[in-house]
Length: 455
Ligand code: FCB
Image 1 (cartoon, helix red, strand yellow):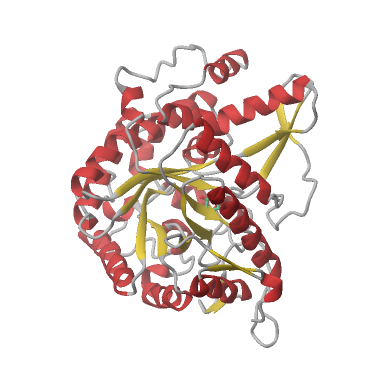
Image 2: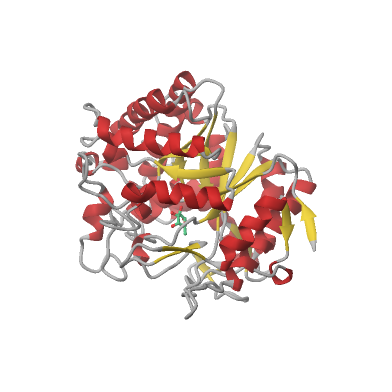
């Protein structure tokens, strides 16, 4: 049971700074909004924080050795803005930049291509105190930060992602209160979403200048949604969800401005006073629509939607198997989503920058982690990706979320997404069965059925 992968298809793994690095007060790192948010009673399910996480800051040589053992072609990680610019803007903390330079050099000498994400949610606390993403100044600060990092690493890093999941930054951070900074205000959330996109638009030319011949783009968490029934009201609820999750970001990035139906929903629901979007200034939309070289897609699950009595969208209970975090396993959604992207937006290149599953399977007495469910999840989603490639969608690579078990934001350490087990007391790493399977897939450059592979 083998099926070859396209020749140059990249298989990698992904992580992010706050979720793995630890070392929050080392070498001059400034505070981030996640340090403060995690300290709030009740904010994090198990009351934990990223103070130690996987101690990747100290242990990165061992982690790169594991990546080399896996045979990863590429590794996607994020740079912590507060390590590089502890005050958000201005004085550069060289020791922070040195860390990422050492990491990049270690990857390159292991023949692993670095994919750098500049913002994976850890805003410097000082910038938050000046308004965070609700302030336009933060977009300008981001472009300066992008300049500092790409100047230093631009001669070696050829793949740059400005933001990870702007929807999460804006909505979880400023509307739902689930992520740092924990606000609950639609007006703030909508302004934040615009400033995040604007900061992307301003950063792209800066990165291109410092890192010529590199690929620059953004990663979105796109949601595959379906109406729970054929009822007109449920279909409209699905349109609204697709609008706030997907089109609100895809449309302006592709030069279409913000979707009118979504603006009308926001005004009708009292989330916005002015349909002219006061936070959008002249020149912003062309800046956001800057041409990019790639689109990153993070995909985990589908969302089935119905309308409540008031017509507002509600997610209904999953119909199929779910992972530990409660997300339904629905690989078909990934291929459908990719085909839609090709048809409606035509990106020149797509990477699946995250895909993975939370299962708590722990080591048995012999020290093995038999996580067949994760292997099956990864297999079915890689399969769905290949289906889309065959249909002509330009998917150039796939990154497993995640290399290591890590700090899952508001869920703390309760969710394990890694293909490598991390014992948080001893910091021992242990490749799970899924890591052994992925290693074989990489070595043979073929999609191997997990049930037919003896590990
Ligand atoms: C994504 C995040 C990533 C991780 C996974 C499970 O939304 O980008 O950091 O938390 O979900």
